[in-house]
Length: 153
View 1: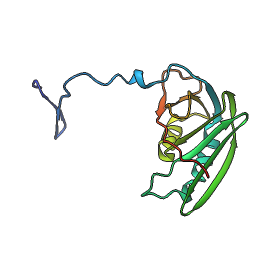
View 2 (view 1 turned 90 degrees about the vertical axis):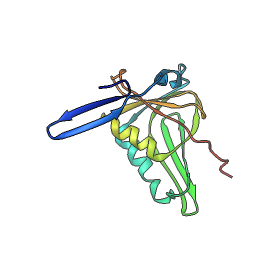
View 3 (view 1 turned 30 degrees about the horizontal axis):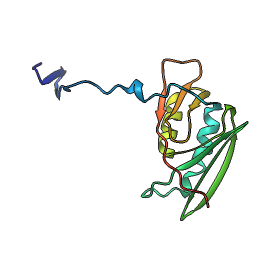
View 4 (view 1 turned 135 degrees about the horizontal axis):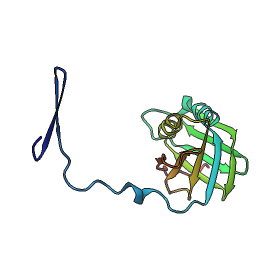
């Protein structure tokens, strides 16, 4: 180990890494402190609903999925030159109605990594990050940044 590097030796391998300088970003500042909408949703139902939009999402385009959380459902839709998809799944939503856009890959990454049957999604508004937490595990969270949505017209 030196001032700028560290070496790990394991069996016949040596790994040399540069040490980071400065202070690590304060990620807690990015986590919203206020929640206006709370959604309890079955993880597999949410994953399946989002995955059904994938056939019309163009890889080279930044097509967000449009998620509407209202009353007892999550409505997911997307539009591209390949077509339009609208799908619904049951969700226990409390608080304000929220329509927000996400990159489908990032939402799926968070939901798949949660490894629980049900997650809690906390929303502050359409331009604030969504906090996704596994139920009964307050020590672990996923922060998914929203994408701006164009008008549906």
